[in-house]
Length: 117
Image (cartoon, rainbow, N blue to C red):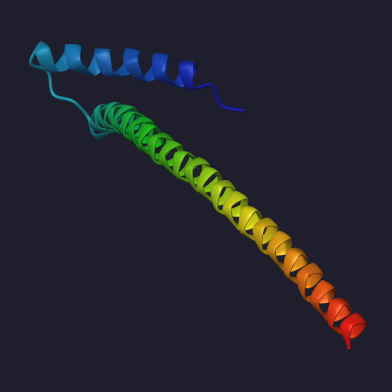
C-alpha cells in the first residue's frame, strides 16, 4: 500500500529544500508553502499520537487498578459468602439435631403414655 517511511523521507527532504530557500531570502511558491503546511501537520499529528498513546497508557493503568480493586472486592465477597454459608449450615445442623432429639423424646413419651394407660 503506502509506505509511511518513504513519505516521511520525501516530505523531510522537500521541507528542508523549502526552508533553505526561505533562509537564503528567496520567496516560495504556493506549492512550496503547501509542503511546509503538510510538514507542520504531520509533526502535529505525530505529537498528538504520542500524547494520545501516553493518555491511553495512563487510562489503561487506571482501568487495571480499578479492575484489581473489583477483583479484590469479589474475592472478599466470596470469602464472606462462604462464611455465611458455613454459619447457615451449622445452624441447620444444630436445628436438625435438636429436631431429631425432640422427636425421639416426644415419641418416647407417647409410647410410655400408651403403655401405662
